[in-house]
Length: 290
Ligand SMILES: Cc1ncc(C[n+]2csc(CCOP(=O)(O)OP(=O)(O)O)c2C)c(N)n1
Ligand SMILES: [Mg+2]
Image 1: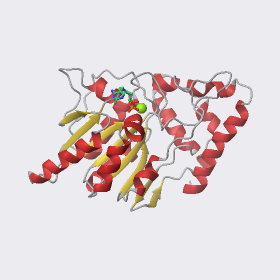
Image 2: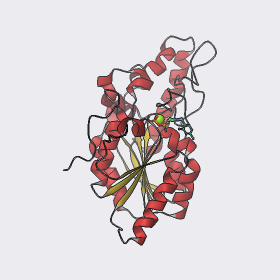
Image 3: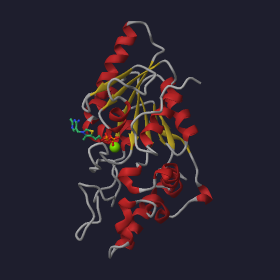
Image 4: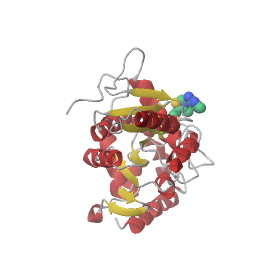
C-alpha cells in the first residue's frame, strides 16, 4: 500500500494525531481529498514549504471545515469525479465546539463526505484548554484542579449521538489504540453514500501527561474500562459493538496512567469522584452491552 502520510512531521513523540491521520488515509485510500481545520494536525504536518500529506490537502478555518468539504464534493460531482473521497479531519475543539454549526448544516443537507473527529479531549495546539470533549474531572489549563475544583465539571458531549440524530447513514466510534478497527471503519464510512461520521479517541501524551511510549496503551485502556465504547450506528441504530466482556478494567487503572487525573488520587473526596467516573463506564457497559 502506498504511504499516504509521511513521517518527518513535527508532532510530539508518540503523537496520537499522526496515528489517526495515517489510519484514516489507510482506510480512505489514495483517491481522497482531505480538508483539515486548524489544530495540532494541521500545524505539525504542513510547515511551509513541507507537507506530510501524499493526497490533496486543504487547510480550512475551524468554522467552515465541513462546508469546505461540501464545496469540494459539489465541485467533484460537477466534474464527474464521483469516486474521489472527501474526508474532513478535525480535532475535538474544531468538531464539537467551533465547527459544529457547519458540520450540522453539511450533514443535514446530505453531502457525500466523511467527517473524522480526532478527539484528544482538549484544545491541544493552544495549550490544553478544555473543550466539549474533555471528560469529567480532567484537569486542563482552563479547568484546573485545585482547592475548590476537581477539574472539568461537565461530562463529555455525546457527539456520535448528535451526528446520528442528523440522519447520518453511518456513525462509528473508534480509537487509535485499535488500528484495524479504525482503518476498517473509515473505509466503510467513505464507501457509504451520504454524510458519514467517525469519532476517533486519541490520547495526547503532552496534554494528558503520560510517557510518550504509552499512547496506544492508554487508548486501549479507555476502551477496556468502558469509558470509550467502540460501536457502529447505521441509520440511527447501533448495529455493532466491540465487546470487552471479562476483560473489563476498573476506571482507576485508566485514570492513574494520566497526570490530568492525578489530583483524584491525592485530594480529599477523590474516591467519590472516581466512583462517579466508574458510574459513567458502568452505564456505557450496560447501554451498549459491552
Ligand atoms: C476561530 C479560531 N479560534 C481559535 C483559534 C486558536 N486555535 C488554534 S489551534 C486551536 C486548538 C484546536 O483544538 P482541537 O480542534 O481540539 O485540535 P488539537 O490541536 O487538540 O488537535 C485553537 C483554539 C483559531 N485559530 N481560530
Ligand atoms: Mg483537541
